[in-house]
Image 1 (spheres, helix red, strand yellow):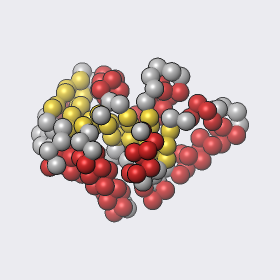
Image 2 (spheres, rainbow, N blue to C red):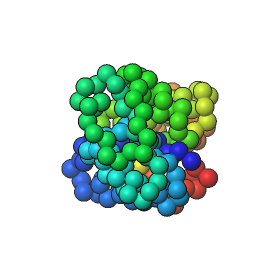
Image 3 (cartoon, rainbow, N blue to C red):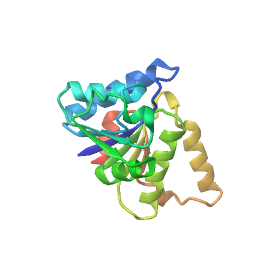
Length: 177
């Protein structure tokens, strides 16, 4: 199984975010899954990639070729590096390569990428599970927003059955079953 992980290029202010990335990396490795990620070596990206890489599991990094500071940076934790033309193509390649999607804590880019997967699954482009790794409640405001959208009639609960908010790897395993 190929697991796409979206996450921050920073480490964040809470040490639990790094601990969560390590735990998720070990879970991916223990199941001999393949990690698909943004190809970086810093922040939570570097934490999860190094964890999977040092366990000897495949790590596919997908980088945009039009972003100078990313494309010229060495990628020490990848077993396969894919260079896309730009960020849009990078996102598309990650969507097509991966079977399941997990968002660790991150910024705008992380939220952009996981919401695109949620949307594409919701409208039936494909049927893939989406997990928001809710370490220390990081994604609670987003969960509340989705609940408010449902309450206001903009989202149907049934359309969101492919989305899980959890940092429990056992619960994630059952969900992706």
